[in-house]
Image (cartoon, rainbow, N blue to C red; front, side, top):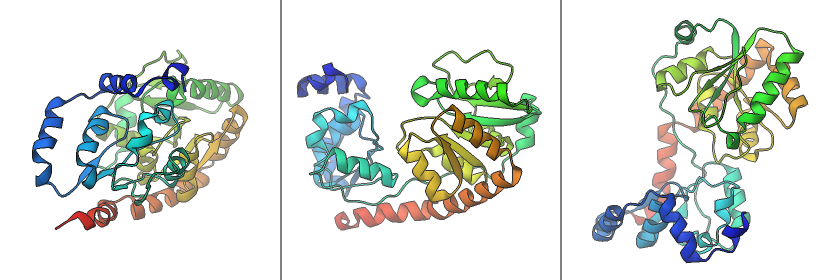
Length: 306
């Protein structure tokens, strides 16, 4: 944690939180005036001002889905009291629960590992994606913010190193807003932000998805890739991503450039990709549908219902 943050007073941390936002005095006023009209409040995630300042107003019927992982803001001292306030929590992965038990050993961290539900389109059209963007070669897919904090600098380094060793026709396709320079490389295609249908069509068209991020509380794009029947390759330094792959049996992970090359070459085998994709798809369709997730939320808040 940055030294200035470690030594900051609660007042200074709360000033930072207001700047972090979203800052909505109207929301605070509304909750104060109408709290009695609601049986329960669920807050997402922990790191925003709307959660930090509003939850204490209704803590006797508040639940928190923190979406927490090992990042510097979670170590600010203002959270030490805050995580004792909710009546229960909703976790997205077992790894998130384990991390919070370590960070807040005295807090009442009770609640289900619920995850989230997906809303895929009715059809996925990989051929349409290839035709629209004139991509004929096999390709690996990255979806998300193109940012060093998401591991994209390492992704570019690893991919370009792979291409030097292996001359197989292959592209790296990026979907998302860049916040860093994307290397000018003949095999790296950055398409920027695309709509939902195009994203799902890209998943249908790709060989497999790559997620290089070292910090995640739950990777939604992994769930989406598995829903589309695709294997994934993830950063082995992220416990959450590795945990998702283990439970789904739907992907591999790497911890250095050598392992990256080995994993990609292993996933070049069509039968390997197909089997991992089938296993991942079965896992997601059993655990990440609306009836399953809704039931976990309703069971949690049932003690507060009339």
